[in-house]
Image 1: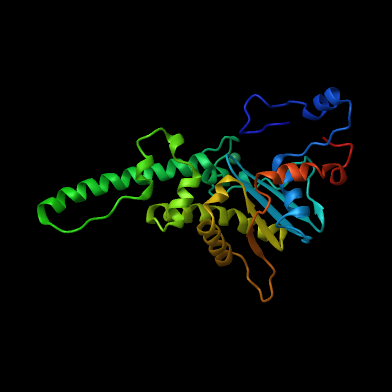
Image 2 (image 1 turned 180 degrees about the vertical axis):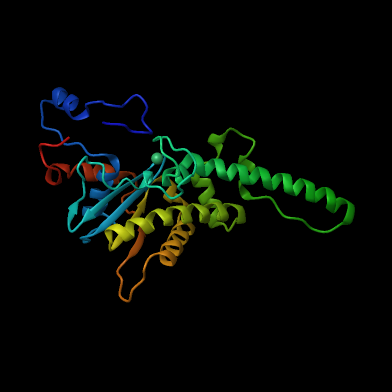
Amino acid sequence: MRVPPNLPGWHGTPVKASLETMTGLPVRCANDANAVTLGEWLHGAGKGCRNLFCLTLGTGVGGGAVVEGRLLLGANHAAGELGHSVIFGNGLECRCGGRGCVERYLGADYLVHRARQRVKAQIRRITSHRNQMAMFGGKGEGPSLLAEFVGRRSSGLTPREIGRAARAKDKLALSVVEETGQYLGLGLVNVVTLLDPERIVVGGGVSGLGRPLLRAVKKTVESRVQLFSGRRLEIVSARLGNDAGIVGASRLAGYLPAGLN
Ligand SMILES: [Zn+2]
């Protein structure tokens, strides 16, 4: 393991060698996003594709690509890292040391943080509006469904609640999800431009944001990529859920060369 930004203390850990010593068996290793890609490609939402991009939205944003029927590894087994591709040149600092990375705007932590900020601002607005209304009469803005989570510890609010509120057409939750979809869409515009996949599979915990997220992603991609007549490009939800990485790992022996980590 080289420099995993979301796994402090694991830098430089020789995973393959350690497991081989422990088990006495040959071991193949891949990062989780590549294992997920393999799983979804061979057994899930990417079945039958020759050109596929698969991403997982969770604490971090992982990505993997299948190009012309082969898992794309790159010279350092670091290909497909959508999470650290840059969408804002001078954007927020990322844990990888860079700036403006996709992951910085899509990770679960940031999503929850942004939703909380919006809810707090809304509560302030409603409170001041109510004070005015008390003087002049009339109806004001109602609070978001997410308001009940704010004020508690941040662990009370997760992408799941944001997704649920968005599906219930809560305006504030919808705006957070749509913004997230736009950021992800921008990252994917670059993927589509570079790799021309026929299908993009979106999975991971944050993808629990569901249809509103996928809708916003599609809208951004469709408005930014070159849409020529007959272009094949689908954006779909993953099928294997949390099992995707395990299913993919079970197939690594057939898809990763033996000599590599
Ligand atoms: Zn980064």
